[in-house]
Amino acid sequence: MHGVQSTVHRPFRETVGAAGYNVRLDLGPDANTLGTVSTGVGADFAIKQAYVALRAPVGNGLDFKVGVFDSIIGYEPTEAVNNPNFTRSWGHTFEPSTHTGILATYRVNKLVAFSAGIANTLSPAINSRTTAGQAVNPPFAFGAKNESSKTYMGSLALTAPDDWGFIAGSTLYSGVVVGFNTGFGLPQQSYYFGATVNTPVTNLKLGAAFDYARTGKSLANVGAIGTFGAHSFAAYASYKASEKITIHGRAEFADISATAASTAQGVGLGLPSSVMSYTGTLQYDLWKNVLSRLEIRWDHALDGTHAFGGTQAPRLESGHLTTGTAQNAFVVAANVIYKF
Image 1 (cartoon, rainbow, N blue to C red):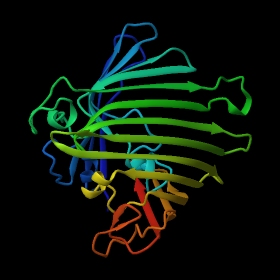
Image 2 (cartoon, rainbow, N blue to C red; image 1 turned 90 degrees about the horizontal axis):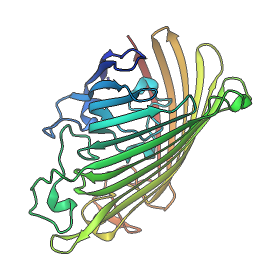
Image 3 (cartoon, helix red, strand yellow; image 1 turned 30 degrees about the vertical axis):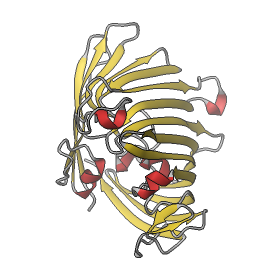
Image 4 (cartoon, helix red, strand yellow; image 1 turned 90 degrees about the vertical axis):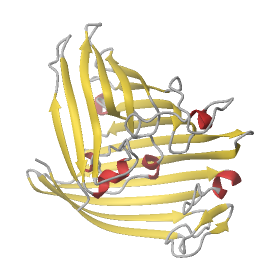
């Protein structure tokens, strides 16, 4: 069992001057991977979202989220039931996940919407703060907190109009998050472009996503920290074969790079510098609130490194530190989700 997700939600009415709230709690081993625990120590429990929703009387209504909310970038949601595949893409692994701050969203009309926000950090820990000595120049003493160092974000969403034929309803989305990651203790920039496209084939939908992340800065008086960069291209396809059966596919190329200083500190441990990944998922809706999945995934290290396996002592291969024994990784997974 991977976990249980529980949501308490009070949506505001679609009127100006309304208010509501949303709280999502996660229980089980997967909760520890979210990294939202403010103490930094997991205990099979995490708060994924906890925000107040407000609508200000501005134009069509200016919506605010105040508190802990999901990142504005990414193709794949963290909620397993809403994700087309059981496993996540490489791009998902280096996207920001959760922020503590304020997010404003405004829908100009049915076709255009944008958002902007400010948060403490890119890191998911609730109420995390930037460590000034690692994030600003000139640096202060390590461990000091710099309250003025914040993370900024923005996004734009475009929807194809109804008179565009089979493309109608398709979406194009872009977003950026720039700030500080307390996990790396370094400045970070994250960029995302994604699209979901309807097709002339009944029940077939396509998607695409591009992720780019870069973190790092060399500070002479605290040592060369080095840089870490990654980008990925992913293509998605979903076909609803029948009322109960849906087939999902994903193909992805990811490139991960780190400077020698970063590698020496363990960044990139067990990761290939370039990788291709293919995922196929057969979803069958057993009952109204129960879905099951059978998934097959293949990851191949294109750089020739033995990035997978992890049973040997650390060693350097093609400039990357690795403990693996294989250039390929295969996963066969079965997944059952009950939604209540």
